[in-house]
Figure (cartoon, rainbow, N blue to C red):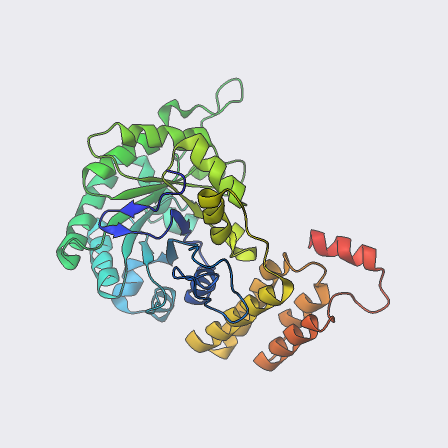
Length: 384
């Protein structure tokens, strides 16, 4: 499947790469930044970001986790998280919860408001989600979860006329199964049976994060567990694509994930926060065997600036400034020594200060503090 665009039910993506729905980070502005690295037709989305003509990048970008109750009540937070536009396509809207009826109605809402794909979260391990029987808690009762999924699939098919597929994102299971020798025992993973059951009721693709709920976000991704899901679904009566997720930090990691697990696509989360061009790189590697040069400093600053401008456009000034204070840490990871730039943006009281700081950095400033040891500053920046 390496180098093959992903087909999810009736939806054919440009590539087999997906942006993960990471809570607090996958807002509309960032999804557009990822898409703008290179449009499918080769046209640059941002001045100064030419990319490689004719090479697409991300195939599907997903929203933050969405509460169906919040969507149905029209709460400001949920509506902001679900915000999309014509340039943000194809887009997946991910719902979480444990009530099938409410999830089904939330899925109808998603279809009505522009979702290309509706995804069910079965992998989030955080307490506020699992205590309401959502997220990875759904892996504790395969039969009940399959029934919930069937209810959602029927609602989406009815609302969309079969044009919008339903997918699911899960982990390998709830408990972290370590045997007496300290090895991971995959023999009782819930994911293979759950994935087969979901495919049987109309789920059109499954994403598997190779960790257990008890691991939360620590430890390693277990590719062997993902491979077992791929094999189970492939030999079932209803084979669907399985997408691998977890510890993908580079284009090479995408290729090795696919080789080792047999997955049809790869979902990338945190690696994209500091290097949103990872999708372009990973697809180019799959299709040509090479990786394009990393964007230059001016291109990286252009991406950072465009993200901020989109945040100002889609939200308000206060929200945009707060997000830039968090985002500059990620963007700065690929800018070399830039602690003064980060600090200036973290304390910026207005958009003008942010723009001025970016301009000063491009002019050679805000890289080292005055009279500091440059070697010590460079090392500190790498560790920041």
